[in-house]
Amino acid sequence: GSGAVLWCTHILSDVGPTFLSRLYPSQGGGCIFVDYPSGSLGYEKINVVLLDASGNLAWGRSVEMTNGNWTTWSGTTIQSSTGDVYVQGDQSSTGAPSLSYGFMFKIAPTGDLRWYKLYGSGSLPNSFAHASTHARELPSGDLRFGTRSVDVYDTSGTHLSRIIRTFSG
Image (cartoon, rainbow, N blue to C red; front, side):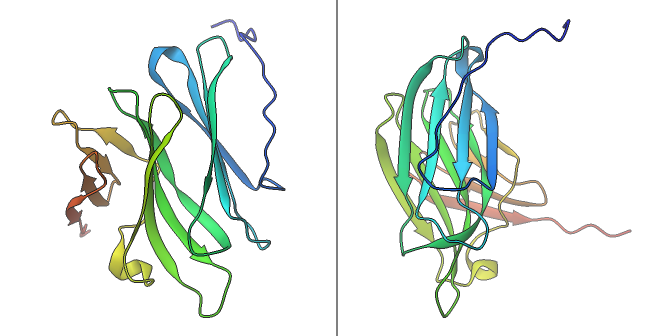
C-alpha cells in the first residue's frame, strides 16, 4: 500500500445522531457498515449496510430493536461463508427498570431480515456472555463470539454452549 484512496462513499443514517459505527470485512473484499444506537437519547434501530469491493451498495437494512428504546449497544458482526450476516451484542433499555438482554439477528445475502432473537431474562450478566469484538465461523458452520467468555450458536440462533475462561497470574 501506497495509502491511495480506492473508493469513498457516503452513507446516510436514519437513527439520528450516530455515536458508534463500525466496519467489518465481507466476502469478496467488500465491507459491512453497522451503525449502532448509543448514548443517552435512546434509539430503536440498528442500520446494516453491505458494500461490495468497489464501495457500491449491495443492500441496506434498518433493524428495529425490540422492547422499546435502548441506550447502549456493544457487540460484533460477522458474515458467514454462505453470505448471511449475523449481528450479535447486548442492549440496555432506557426505561425503568433498566433491563439488559443479549441479542442476535440474521440478515440473508439478499438483505432480508431472517430472524431477531433476545437472550436472557433482562439481567445481562446471567443471560449472555459479554459482547465481544471477536467473532468467527467454525468449520461446522456454527458461530463463535467472544474471547474470554465464549458463546457458540448455530445458524438458527440457538445457543449451543458457553465457556467462561478464568486466568490466574
